[in-house]
Image (tube, rainbow, N blue to C red; front, side, top):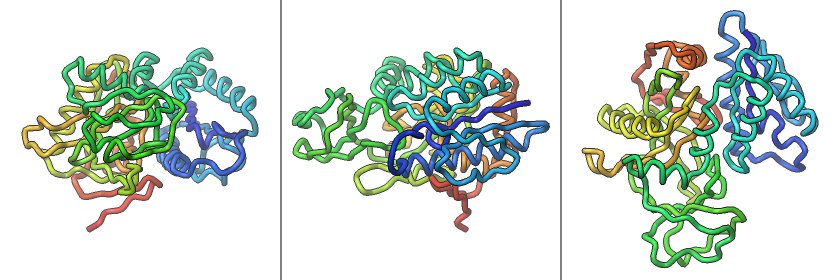
Amino acid sequence: MHFFLYEWITGGGLVEEPGQLPPSLLTEGEAMLVALATDFVALPDAKVTVLRDARLDAFQVSRCEVIEVHSREHLLEELIQLASLADHTLLIAPEFDSILIKTTRQVRSAGGKLLNASQEFIAIASDKHLTAEHLARSGVRVPEAIWMEPDAEKLPPDFPYPAVLKPINGAGSQDTYLVHSHRDEPPGHPWPRRLERFQPGIPASVSFLCGPQGCTPLPACRQHLTEDGRLGYLGGSLLWETELAERATLIATQALKSIPGGLGYIGVDLVLGKASDGTEDVVIEINPRLTTSYVGLRAMTEDNLASAMLRIAAGKQVALNFKRDPLEFSAAGMVRRPF
């Protein structure tokens, strides 16, 4: 069976852009692709193809067919051809500039069989403000927030601070800032942004493998973020406290059920508040694609998550077994057990 795995930044998404590739996006993109390709090549009779920006070092996973990309035109040609020939195509691409939704549209137009969510699901989840409004109407708790015009020069004085200012369409904590009052002066941004009330608590995520019969939650993870006011993603660890994990899974499941069309791997980011009954827990956003948590989750089980993803996408039931030990993982793909 032929699998085409396309990760945007390592696969030539910026192949004609001069200078250094964005470090955080490159680090996480490489970590996700290596983990994913390692699982897919382990499947019986699997052929795995990836695209590779010609400026990058050799791909680390053996037994993969690697096609170097030298231009945008070359990228599009290979993307369409491979998607049309592969038995399954899985895309990992950011939501900003509509890259994810445009790429999925290109693959579907070429007749590709995608292991990604529907266009409708991606259209909602790619817009952080639209997602929050949809969840709120569905009874899922989200932070108080307002929509801000592109290049707004001043923060509103009547908003409850501290707050998080972030792009409506964003990924990898790009252009995200923690602001403490309306007197703060974050850099301008030429696209709309969401000013969201900062939620104190434990940043967490729950990932799901989704198919026509529903979505299977994977173990909840604690998120490790930078403390420099940018809320950058450093990695995560197993949320081993049973009560917290159950609360995280409950609200993440409620969020995911409110949006039809989920398929493949989807992540839900949230914050667990102080109230033990979960009434202060909120959903921050939904990632309509594979996330870096895949790196850690695959190390928590002896099952093959790629195989499970395929079976669930085909409408089959899958039982997965995970270890309950304090595993930690970094955004660069490093996994360790601290004890």
